[in-house]
View 1 (cartoon, rainbow, N blue to C red):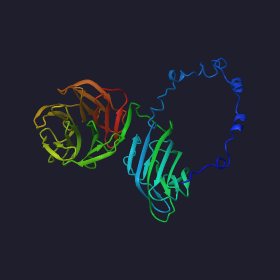
View 2: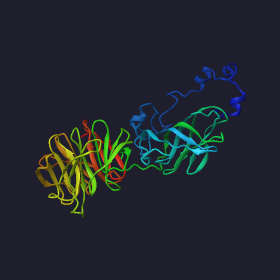
View 3: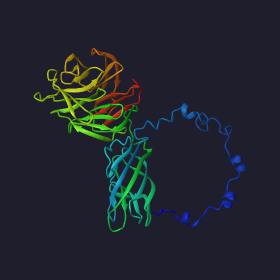
View 4: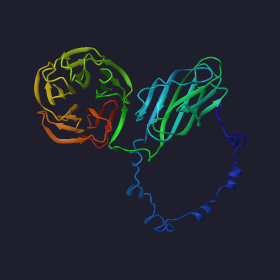
Length: 418
């Protein structure tokens, strides 16, 4: 597949002798250079623009990185995309890598731009058995944009092209491939989209202490040492296993009449609990599942309440929050309640870390530390910078904090470690 080149590039070669003749002599550079002595104080403010001024004044290397739109990457691949004669959009089947791009939940025919900015896109394509070339273009909100031509030609079985383009937050991109064989052809393809120039005017930073790890319809969250697990009970009582960037690996439905909420891992199996507020006839107890989704055990907790929320495992016993009566409960894996005390207001998700219980207080938008007697220690983390409601929590072994926001995603706290 022949790549487009400019007319000048096709008709002229670089003459090394002419290049040498027309180059600027070293003495001229020395003659017209501006030395530190000639750049007097006051020419640019009151100081010279030295190398250390960037770190010592308002311009700091991390300023742009702190923008919500900065440093975002999305890589999608297609293993056997079907392209009709005359043109078709590439349907991608796998998210290879995802750093932010919060509106992209799964691979497909398109992706959504998270912020206003200048984007860079790279496309690689290889036809399976076709060698007639074709045209690859970027389509933005249903329009083939002029600057979106990756490559064009009438021969070849593979192609590589790069474009840069301006996109608005929420706009949708697709890759359009045109071939003229007269029949359907298949190809493998890879597209990599990245933000190269986030627009600081259009980007607002709710709180630079939070970074979206991955988008997901998640209420509860944990990491078992190998993969992420999330719960979602608003559109189906689903427990989902996810890879490092949040892409779904597997899932199973929970046998619970209400909404699945909290999730815990005991080193072998998963435990979940649910919220049946307003439906006392439903069993809102605890369920133990294998990681393959087999129901292994049921514990009835109706005596505590019908609005169970957060759930965690301390190495011996389970702990859960009841959100209606705002209770904190320690229960053995056999179902014996050992402690039932008042919990922080409107408790949500919870986790066990460093000998303490860490509970999301949804109404106060705080993460509250409690000791194993259920008493708050006074240590809290402010969650008000998160746009959507914080629900689930998990803390890594090194103290890195992660918060799930209902129907939004999982965020990493950049404010330090616990």
